[in-house]
Length: 165
Image (cartoon, rainbow, N blue to C red; front, side, top):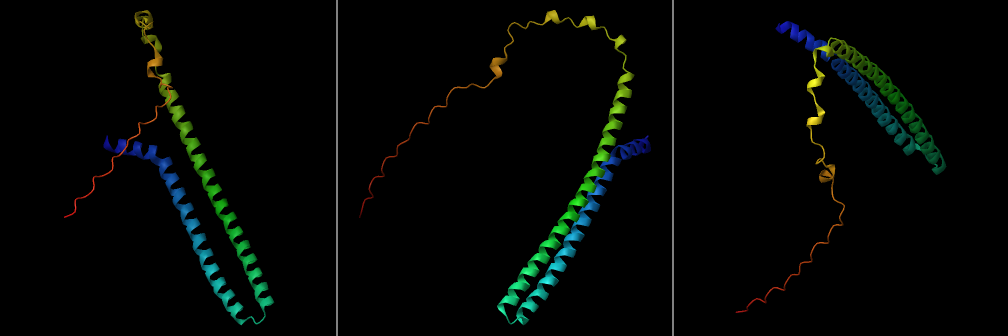
């Protein structure tokens, strides 16, 4: 009995376990990308500083700066696109898992509902004429719309002067 319950629990939790695994793999992939990019940018930045210190002309230094920033922009754009691609792939996998799980739950609920026999219930016993609804008023539960009254102003008396000795 215990093993049967555990197996059923594992089967029911399988979609969540798979979703957690997908999230873990995606996070590891994104962290790996970020680590690689940070290392590359640091190394490239140090190379750039070295090149700038060796530069004698201001115009050449400016051209180095422009080239460096264009290279960094291209690198960051590439990494951002790769990260978005990884996130979209994970989203597609998760959506598929949850759609499949929802479909299975719906099918199971419908199978259980089809076993339900309405003919066994005597609906005549539910006589709605017994309920007195003429005193039922929903307006008692609605918030009032009265304007809020301004708070009364409090005045403070001046402190008595201290006695000098």
